[in-house]
Image (cartoon, rainbow, N blue to C red; front, side, top):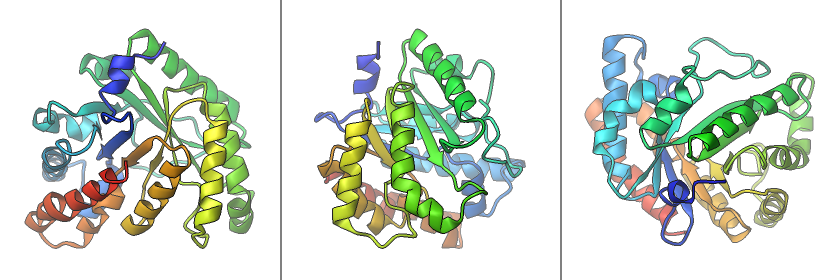
Length: 289
């Protein structure tokens, strides 16, 4: 059974989930203009995550960080804020989305749970890919192990564009394909973190978006929350409002809060952006819950 105490640690008083995610590695190093594999880049990454933790954790209900660069930020976490840690291994080499995902360490789940954290696992996925069944079986094994250790498992299957489809076909079929994915992963996690069901290629139609969100709620057997990726903040805010009215449980927001740091010239400006603009954006999201 799900660890209700662990789950409640990630929820607001009203039972919503409001997670700030800064477990990014490759995308963050690119934004900051550093090489994450050298000592200077590592220090920059760690300091950025420490600023995120001290700025966001007093506001949101949970934070999502990585062990690789986020461990030093844990001491800055507000005691009232829950903790998730990412399990997947990040490769700095280009990766085929059709390959099987990897975890950062064989004892990764044990290490995360020992920190009192819930487990989050990301994977590229498409229901029609050759390895779809094998990927689901792997996620199922991670879910079972997390349950055995008494923690919460959040899965983030992100639909990728298969090489066999045109972009137009992918966009057209996305709502139906996403529902199939939601149905497939509902029994393999405690919380499902997914894309908003209207892609950036589409004109934002609030009525259609609401219908799609409602369909996800009907299809999902577990709470679902929306991720942000590179979505502009105003579009993400608008989408979240619609999703919440149609059964969504909350959000796991990352780059929508702070992706503009890549355009700022100095580290001081980047950190000030987190403490001001990004925090104000987070408050705007919290006000929707």
